[in-house]
Length: 455
Ligand code: NAD
Image (cartoon, rainbow, N blue to C red; front, top):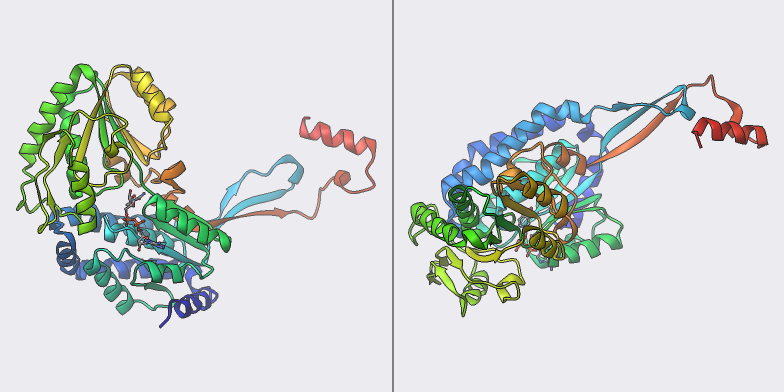
């Protein structure tokens, strides 16, 4: 079955209006939840095979997120899909104004490999909640996880409603020829550009969830030990292969040594040795070679041992590092943590504001002026004060980038909105309308209109 044929089938199914029914959507979401819970062990086995991701990590960072997402939409779907009344402006009185959320149609989700379940299934769930049909193209790099999603979803759902398309670049290129009603892409800025260009040719709207270099700033007003513990957890989670991981740390020079010592202490305590069941492997040889290449000639203050056969790289701290160094010119996306220093907080923010806007930024400081300057002077997708990564676990916060780190957002109501059109409708009464707008135009009407508009 060609993807084009599935796309056509989905278009036909969408036009039957079945997905407009919120009862249908909820039933399908419940079915997906049941399917995942009944086959949980398959998910764990596949991801372990792909890059030795542990059951604990897979549950906390993938399956629980997916299942809670379904719960969120089951709880809030009626409210989210209800027409919303808004006030009607003076010139349209008497009348009523409403916003009708409606599904877009047939949408395409393209996933990335680093959280292969979450990044394919959470956009799918938001698309289903909003009443769309959907083709999902997970990343092909973790081959076993892609297979599990394809087998389960294609084996239990009608492909005219949702379908998992397996494949890599040629298949994705083929899919991009179809005129979807939206494309939701998660991946690198480089491929994001390819997707955006393909979408533009057909005038297809996009959400682009991209990456970049997300900084963690540690000021002398921080609780250094807590900062170090949280940075170590966030950086080495999934072996640094997290889009919102702190890419690098910039610490105030006065507390640099204290921070480095604390980072080392927590790295030792978290015990990321080669056979640690909780430490993930690097996804493939190409990324392994890229990362070990970055270690060559670098000043390694801690860790950095590696084993190509196991695709294991021990968490590393690189220090000293300068802004001009190679490692600061690309998203690291692995367990290497450069530590840079600063002396002037506002000067640092000014320097960062000149760079590409990151997907995330983190500040460790208990100084309210620094916190305020961080929020008002630095643009970034989202972030935390005194923590890392955790902002995206709150489904009341939108998750998405800005500038080169992305377009649009999702999670909770924002995911529903991303996959909905907000149809604006004015319902007008047949009585009580002043004749001001109708010709013939007179000076008197003109004056009244200006008066009514307050201009
Ligand atoms: P990638 O851009 O290489 O691949 C993403 C998807 O695009 C895959 O499904 C792949 O098959 C497809 N693809 C690759 N080349 C293509 C091409 N030429 N034409 C069409 N499709 C193509 O990204 P990745 O390596 O899977 O993920 C890493 C990147 O994703 C990092 O930059 C990371 O920061 C970013 N990321 C962002 C988020 C987010 O939520 N913002 C989440 C995870 C990862």
